[in-house]
Length: 198
Image 1 (cartoon, rainbow, N blue to C red):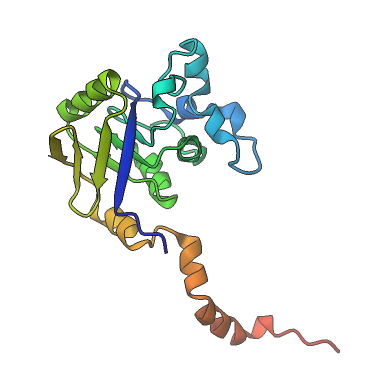
Image 2 (image 1 turned 30 degrees about the vertical axis):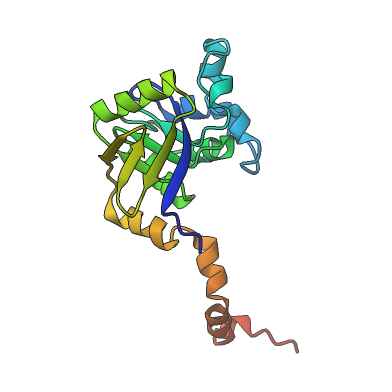
């Protein structure tokens, strides 16, 4: 199972409160059969409106893997495409003031940690990443700390979700694969799976 204990990399600041899932991935992109290609469409309308000046378009953030956001990020509809689009763009973790509950759950379900810290810390991180985009960030889910450029501060996440990430139990497919012998033993005992032909 895939344990997620630490995320290290550079960050991309997306500034603003109440950024909803329709802004993260507009509804017209939800008709896809798989999530492939959604990364290219993350923040599609915002990127058009800002004429190439959205952080997801700026060259200095193209290799970033940690998203830094403000309050109530991921509100609105419960579309699971939103965290999928961010993950397929390259995001491995999100730091913010707060997250909409369903968005947070959808993120944990795909192994995308969302940690919170106070507004002043988020704003400091966003300013730092705006001024020095190549700053390295380190999110430690065991110590529940984020550190960069001499700044180390505590972050929060509910303990159940944190344990799922640390132990790898967020990954349902891996759990199934690791229990294949037990699954075979159980299915062998199910009478409705024993087909007989006359």
